[in-house]
Length: 178
Image 1 (cartoon, rainbow, N blue to C red):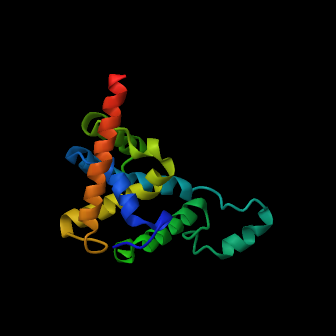
Image 2 (image 1 turned 135 degrees about the horizontal axis):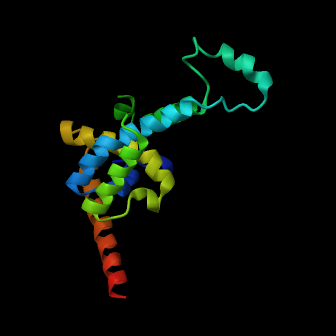
Image 3 (image 1 turned 90 degrees about the vertical axis):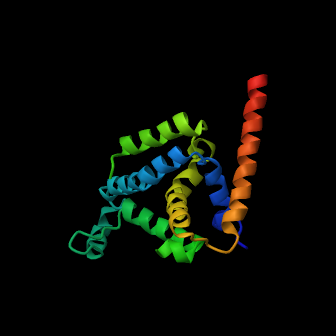
């Protein structure tokens, strides 16, 4: 059982995201497109200038590069943040490009045609970008290898997902009847 709260509550994040991805076709679409999307975003950010405005620091920045490969740019900083966050969520799996347009279009088509529910990013943009790639990774590890961050994780999350979907459907029905 998880004893983490807030930002590091993996069970809460996984249940939230799982409730937005219950249709099999939509799950497959997201499995194929989330990581390339995250990767493409990082590639774009790797071409940005280092986030230091004062040009007097450029010599220091150049000293921290390795033949131009390692740059302290926004892409590198974001990659480090993602890696540290995923490891903090779950050490076991945390350690362990299609174009942006194709990936985003595929995901929105998956939600519109198959899930019949708005993407999680419309409910919580921050959580969607932060948890989307990790959700797909953990979902694949769970489905293919039976991986669980701790015993009972899947059963507890599945129950939360069912309840969230039930509440969402009831709310949707109420709006329709009004």
